[in-house]
Length: 500
Ligand code: ARG
Ligand code: ZN
Image 1 (spheres, rainbow, N blue to C red):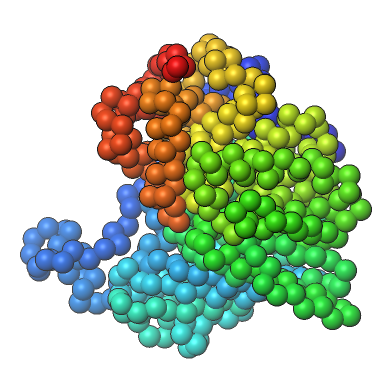
Image 2 (image 1 turned 180 degrees about the vertical axis):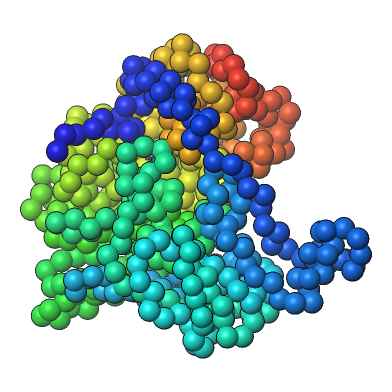
């Protein structure tokens, strides 16, 4: 199979930048989906039964429990996620020992309106049974929606435990922004997950949107001899002569698109990193010895990034490398996804992308985008971090990158469509936006600002306006204006000179 250029690497060369910026930019407006009005999810406290539509809706919600909506109202992706509740935890049990995947997902949720009906996102798979608080519930399927009607209403101020039993062979979803199949992949050598942005719903029912993060427990049973790795910490492993069961616990909030599992003939090598972070890398057993040295800079990167971004936000970190070419790498929470071939490229190239995915653990994973059109808060920040690492290492400088970007007429990084959300505008102009801020306020203030960003919005989701507010509060209106121009103006500003 021909190897396509690596997504992130192709963003590193000027020619690829031009190709990316032009060809993707051109069809972008047509590919855009119509923004949807968010479904109201809160009940106004002082509603009365009078004239306006809003008041009527509110009153109806009060008198008769209303249904949860079938989307959160994401500006890029209609139909994504659901309204009417907040998911608190997912307990996913997967059995991979048979012909097809047999699974149970238990979602604990808190209603934000009284619910007599609500949706989870699920694509494909056969649903056998749904219960809500242990009582059988009716359900129907339509598109990505699993519509559930519980036997009893779910009142405000309570929690509901929703159990979905399902099975089948997961199908992937086409990537609206490039040639990646999203979701759960079944391969000859095993399985892996690459979901960003839409693929989470291919393997577990959820509120599939980064504005609703939750904790996860993922239990996977595989045939004896195979290994299953997932996010967080391995809290249990049981082996019989036929099968092995692995239980992975992610105790910090995680967006559904960052949840992952990989299974196959892998070796998990565990070591201790700085600040008691557990490092576990998951490499094909027969290739582990050759590939492990490529990951030797992890501790050093963790130390440097913890110094400038604040403490690493999770209990563990590591990389999984799959024995199949990918055109990208992905920052799955605490277990970044790579392919084995990529790890054999020259050191600086590998380290650049390792730094990028590690930085996403703070930016994207700990602080997640409130909506998908805020994607530069992920990619601009992670790109700034990989540029910083490369510059420290004596490679390409920020000035050189700004020079290359100049003739490309990059759009503002806040202006994206499903087709352009991972292009050079978002990565490169996004990174230069932060570099411009760094040069305006100086390294010390800039690093403290990044730490404040991670502290304030960690565990949750944020917007560009949240970032601008934080900058204004800490550094004043002028610094915020610099970032606003980089983030929103049609013309890309000049990179200020380096301070000191
Ligand atoms: N977040 C990934 C990275 O920058 C890129 C994901 C690309 N996803 C896609 N659907 N095209 O490392
Ligand atoms: Zn990225």
